[in-house]
Image (cartoon, helix red, strand yellow):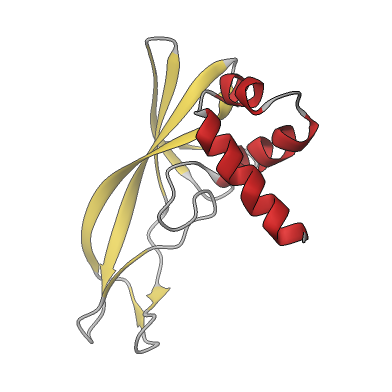
Length: 140
């Protein structure tokens, strides 16, 4: 497939393939190669160290639960530091996309119960409660 698509939060993403498996939509994506600045020494590098596949839960597309399989690129700097590329759709150490996190936070406030919100987004009740708690801390 290998095409560029424009979805909110995915402006620069290259879609490698899409497949439907057991009522779930799997989208394999990567970011285009570009120079990144080393967080340690500040020099720019395009040398790729390796790749890692990261599975990310995303908002439903076409009424199907959506999983992103992100081919995360790690860069190597001359100073010896290895670091991951920046991307717009998932925060560091997270397995849920930025858009899904936002939707869960909004629904946790406006929804009837945490359990209902969890069922709508295909996640656990404890995940919804944690997102709600983070939102409550930020507003206090």
